[in-house]
Each structure stands twice: as C-alpha cells, then as structure tokens.
Image: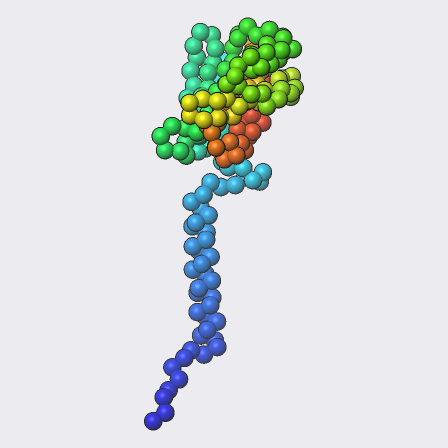
Length: 194
C-alpha cells in the first residue's frame, strides 16, 4: 500500500510563511509600543515644566517624577528618575531666585577651593558653558559617601536679576545609565522670555 504525501504544496508554504511573518511583525510592533517612543532626535518622550514667575522651563524624561515648590522667594524643582525600586538613583534639582551668588569667577574659585579642601570630593573639572544664552560655570565632581562614590554636576548662572542653579547627582555605578537623561535635562533648560 502506498502512503499518501500529506505535505503541503508550494503555494500553501508561501501562505504559511506570510502568516508567520505577519504574526512576528505584529508581535514586534506591540513590543516596540511598550517602550518609550523615540523622537526624531532619538530621545525619550519628554514632559515640560514651566515657571513663568522665575522665567524658565525645563523638559525632563517622562519616566522621571517632578516636584516643585516656592519657598523664601525661590523656586525649587526636583526631578527624580522613577525606574528604580526604592530610592531614586539619579536626581536633578533646579533652584531659581535671588541666591546672592558672587560673580561667576569668584564662585568658580570658591567652589574649587571647597572641593580641593574636602577629602570626600574630587573635581571632575570646571568649565564655562552657555545655558540658553547665559554664561554659566559647570562643575563636575565625584563624592565619596557611605553608599559609595557618586557623580555630580553643578551649574550656576545668572540672567537679569535672578540666579539659577542646576545640580545633578547619580548614585554609584549608575552614571552611564542616567548620563543621557541628565544631559538632556540641562540641554533642554530654557528661559521663557527672550
């Protein structure tokens, strides 16, 4: 007795392959939808916080949390990464108001001396940068704490009659993970008025 070949023909194989490709394509689409959408710049989705009284806005990743308050004539904005269970591994704080800074040159010298005279701090360099048209000093540092060595960045600048400070801190071993987020927050800080 001869066995019948119950295999599928070439045209049926093409249909099966097309169905498999379609299922995989739909699966990939849904997997991609679960991740933050990428903008044209290749960045995550960003939310925008504006404070018109202190003339600034800042964009931050949508997977970070934001708190803000005004106290003693100053605006405080606290941004925390929100992907880590428990404590946040990265934080950015923005302060705006009359902070009574000395000139940026004097401030740079004062902070350099403080870092140099503190055994728990190590300078990663001080440079002058531009923050939306305002001259600023940008100080990178490492800080030794009981939890390990964290990395930080402080940026000071003035505009009109207001002083601004942006400080960022990332816990040990997490700098590379949040470096792009922090750089984006700093880069997306802007003044509302021209």
